[in-house]
Image 1 (cartoon, rainbow, N blue to C red):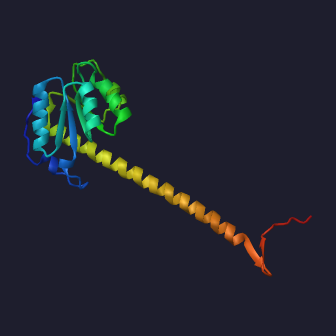
Image 2 (tube, one colour):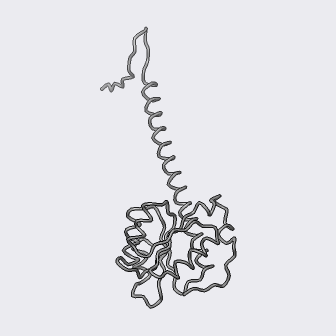
Image 3 (cartoon, one colour):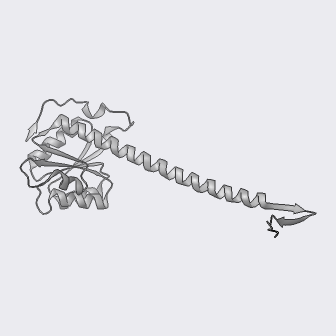
Length: 191
């Protein structure tokens, strides 16, 4: 199920390019198998992430409503609601990235999984170092997307301000005072 090539204790703390502390990053681990939840929770905690666990999709949605979750790692096969339906629900309601774990023999295609809104697909057996790398990539992508959206918002606000200033300037420059009376510049066409 898992490939423990190595688990460096500082793996999650190595990427400080975004100045995000990994202890502020919360990961929700969703699996029907208790041993999988425990192993992933221990590995993510060792990497410096805060972890929350759930045994099924319904419980995962409850955890998402109770906590500020950054990344969800979910098994594709879950009781009550499979991982794809959970992914769809998460993408519709929450601002969390989803990493789906699936066996090569599962009856789902990569395209299907990504179309449901997954940020990443990790094939079983899961390599913990690979999972660390994918989490960091997803977090970097999320940070870049938020920065881009913020910059776009500022650009739109700046453009609106510029347009309002330009219209005001045009109005003021078209006003003239002649002998104490305000007149508007009027263009006349003479035949």
